[in-house]
Length: 124
Image 1: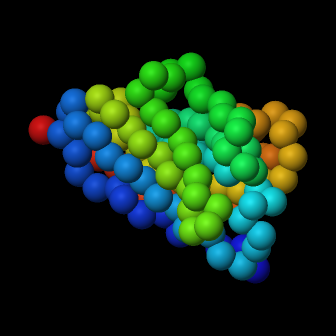
Image 2 (image 1 turned 90 degrees about the horizontal axis):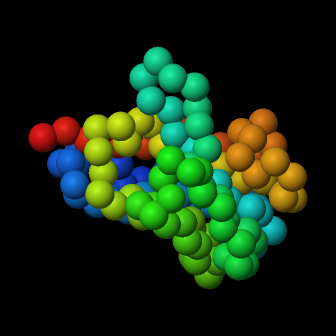
């Protein structure tokens, strides 16, 4: 059974940075495209970023380009999300997800495995 566990969330001041991690177990991590999604209160879950199996392909939501970087370490079965220059609009529960294949990378329905999420709150 594939399990994903996010960490690194918390309270961050506007303008600050944070790094989220997602550790994957129970599957072959290097076979998966990994994605990050987020869901703010009262809003639908939205795509943030994804990264290909060997890290050579990345994709970002237009709303976060330039502020967010996704990376992975296949030796550690872990994917990361670096978020810089945070604003209150970044407040959300952040989820990592795993899938195979590259169709519709921003579609949450394409991702087979999900973590439980980690809360990020941006506030002064």
